[in-house]
Image (cartoon, rainbow, N blue to C red):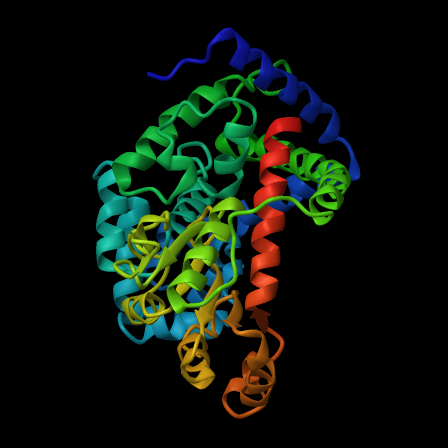
Length: 391
């Protein structure tokens, strides 16, 4: 059983007290209403007596309604491609029923559901079970993964905060710990808090992190100005494809992304560049077809939820069209695309991007020259060094 020490308990109670004041504000009331509406909608549409008659249209609405689905720019395409076409509404209906109303332990039900229906991540699954049964199940998404380490409550294994959960047993550990936190919400006004109450508190703390980040941004600008004046750096002129990939991996690591490269065995300065990447393989963020497409991209930066945020192709001497063709395979995801190449190839990039079908990426695809990549690396590297010393 998890237990908070005195320091952790005091830190959490401090935020609970702040939340009790904040929840009476307009922003706090809007957040509570949003949670209650989420609970009302999902518990009604996925009620036991209605689930056996779940239609395709209602399933579409439910999937689009989920917060976890906001990563998709084209939700309709996702629903058709990953759920309705491969499984059909009958199989989806049956497995949702087993997930929500099966007799096995929740960890077994989650594992069985993920095995039978691909495409639902833990953020989707826990959002569903949480809002249908807020008294029994917690939500595990970006909020707790960000908030708990921030306030010193990262008692769970570190990988739970940096990566996606592996299986249902991982979730039950999260549930046990979140139950301990939930009990700390008991007071005169609420003697029986549920996990919805806890998520509202975590949301409040999440907003405070954002505000602190905004304040730090002003301080960080001063440090960046120092860096721009010129500091010594190990980043040198780029002369090979492998060197560019190595720099992109280093840059992504500095910026806090989970980095991946397809060229694990290729070397730069006698070292495999794959050793610089944080991820050894692509996370299970989508269906198998898109996972296979992603594996072929030179460098990908994933966020803490293991969703791709930047997909990057290096075009040292190869045709820029080939890189664009690989990137366009992931156009349905809410990601940014980047072509990295020698400075004199920018005109070629702009020409190719204007052609069909590449032009559909026009507002989402940028060109970074080798010289600009080196500048980014130098600034980021020195910024990190100074920040580690001063902040």
